[in-house]
Length: 77
Image (cartoon, rainbow, N blue to C red):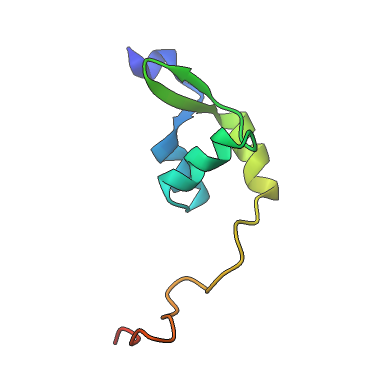
């Protein structure tokens, strides 16, 4: 039933997977109103169209490339 009600919507964990970021990052984007979402049944939902539009312009935060170790950490073999 939930699948039928929210067809065309992503939960926050699903949106995070789509954007390839942590789910808390998506929650912050929603709280900051950078990403539109609705709350139903105690969960946040992002419309697929809104997520796709957001993904086209989202650059994320500048930082280390994925997989690169911090200076004080040893790189994994």
